[in-house]
Structure formats: C-alpha cells, structure tokens
Length: 348
Image: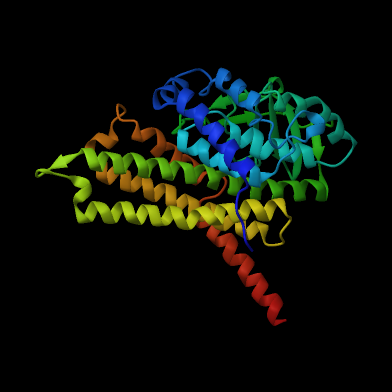
C-alpha cells in the first residue's frame, strides 16, 4: 500500500503549527497548567475557529466531517507544541463516538451536542470503566461514561467529581460519581460493545499520535541543548555517547511514526486488523516518547529535574500519555493475543 498525506492535510498542519508557535509557547503551557482549567478557553476558541475542534464532527452538524487520517498530523502537532487543550478526548474520541452511535436516542444527542462541540462550546471528558479516572474533566460540559457494558452521556452538573493527583498539569484525573438512568443511556448491548471497542482503538492511535509529537519535541530540545552545553572545551553533542543516545531516540520515533499513520488509515477504512494496528501504534509511540524522555533527562543532567527548565513539560506529557489508554505492555499483549488467535484459526 502506498500512503502519503495530501496537500490539504499538510497545509492544515502548517496552519496549526503557525498558531501554536505564536500562542502555545512553553510559557503559555506553564500558564495553562497553573490555571483553574489546565487549558485556555481562548486558545480552544481559536482552534474551533480553525476547524480543528470540529474536524471529526459531520458537516451536517457544523463540523468538517473528516477522519483520523486528517486528524493524525494535528494530534502529532499538538504533542510537539505541548498543547494543553483536550483535543484528544473531545475531537479524537467523543465526537466520532457520538457521530457514529445508532438509534433514536443517539440522534437527539447528536443534534444537541455535536454542533456545540464543533463550535468549541462543549468540551467532553471520557471514562470507559468504573475503575478508571476520567481525564480532562475541568471545564467539561459533558462526560461519556461506561457502566456495566453500557455507554452513558452524562451532563457535568449531574456528577460529583473528586480531583486526583496530576502528573501532567493539563490532564487532570478525577474520580466521578454519577447515577445511570434512562435519560443518560446512549448505547447498550452489542451496540455499546462495538462502540467501546472502536473507542479503545481510536484512543490508542490518537494517544500514539500525540506521543510522536512529544518525542519529536524532546529530541529537538535535547539536541539543541547538546550543541549549546560545553564540557572539556567542546559541545557535549560532539561526544560519541551523546550522539548514540540521540540517534537511538530518533530511530525509535521514526519506527513508530508509520505505525501510527497506518493505524489511522486502518481505522478510517474499517480494516479487519485495525485493532492490532492501533495497539502496535500505541506500543511503539509509547516506547519512543518515554525513551526520548529518558534520553532528555540523561543529557540535560541535574537541570532536567528542575521546574525552571521547560523539558519537564514534555517529559510529564510523555509519561502520562504512555500510561493512558493502555501501556505499551498491555498493547503488546493485545497484539500477541490476536496473532495466537489467527494462528489457531489458520491451523484448524
């Protein structure tokens, strides 16, 4: 299969980079992390005006009606810039789930919430098991929650939220208490099972895409530091060991990137192996980002541990997202299970 991004997709990424280079500097990320929400409502409005927030919302509801292949470069760019806004949860996960949900009840919810999402008026948080903390609750008007195999759409005011400790200042976990009812029920039975499985695949791929950008930024910042930092009369970037660390980090990133792009294409096109591709993407991207974080910390040395240096913003995003929606080990186990099933079916 030959795959390449078209001119429109690349231009959209360039426009987002121009916006984030101007309004999402490291200082802006720090300011957002210190705020009540953890992200900027003004920047979210700007993203909505660009069409980024509503990219996956069908055009009948005010969005662009695009798929994950169109979104994947923007998610990667969000990771590169450290974008604190909940693009992953709202645009990559919640909007496609709502848009694809069948049934009359779902139709009424689409009409109510999808235009609000596209306009930037509704942030959505997602929690897919009672044991899992919901992420990006601050400022969310709506929560998509799972209870005993059913999917519910719950307004924020109908929940009680207890904030937990946050590693990443923009991704703040919270335990959410709520009561399911016929009014909150979106999907049940096989419809819910199919939607939850699709959500897991999109979350793995989308989280992987953000991690690509995080890894890229960590490598770029660390390479720049290695050029500027002088020891024994020479930049440390000229030392063989430092070169090897950076080269290994870059190799992991370059191996992960096509896996994430393939997963986005597979999900959009209904590939039977899409779940396996999504798991491979998340595993490889998690390895790339956490490996880049480890390399960044090794090369920066003691200054890398400090709050004053910007590198910690991206290291914390790497560690937080690598653990979200399934660790690298979890997704490797998923791939192995699928391979074993395929082998048994082939031999029977």
